[in-house]
Length: 266
Image (cartoon, rainbow, N blue to C red; front, top):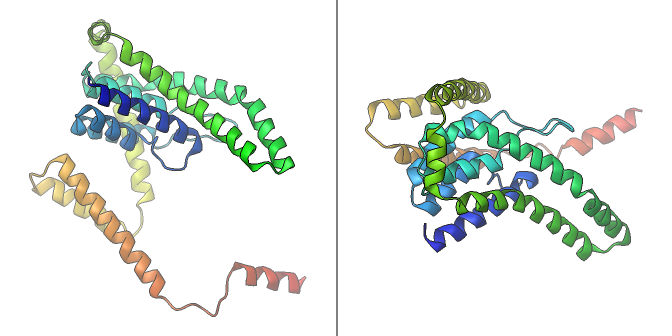
């Protein structure tokens, strides 16, 4: 692996780790993280295929209150690195590795959240003092720690001899990997069912049907289909926003007007 690819992978791992807790840019989503690793290693198609499968698996993973869900950022980067990098694992092995790495990432996430409580208290003190620069520094420090949560394990995997990793995976019985792959396939079906449930709208079903027709009756590759889907999505959003902007305003009535009316009634 070249030096440029190594640097790009480490940068991606750091940004994915930060966004995994910030939840702002959605870079930590497997479909994006694996694709970026695929681009950095020169194996874009493998990254997209792995990311799409992992996205189906992890689409229902979310934090509920104080319960921290299995990590998404760490397994996305590690699996993509092992599949698209010098180790060149199969996508099946990369998917089988996802669950244990996600549990490890969850434990690291919980431990780091506990360890940065002092940093949060300092940020609160800075906010009370009106010291915005100090508060921003505390915020960046906590984010950087979360970035290192993914960067350091990624760097450790990169320094291990790829031959040893391949030998280690070859020692795993085929029945184990096949069983994990079958169970993960069932989880992917659940993720697909969640997407279908979200698309249960008369304005979206037509796009699902068009996608199936194009995939079934054309010889286009997965990358070309993804580009067509992205283009149609952007076109649909643009048309919807244009239609909403063209609607006349209803006399300036908004939620605050309704709230004022309720206060008057009281």
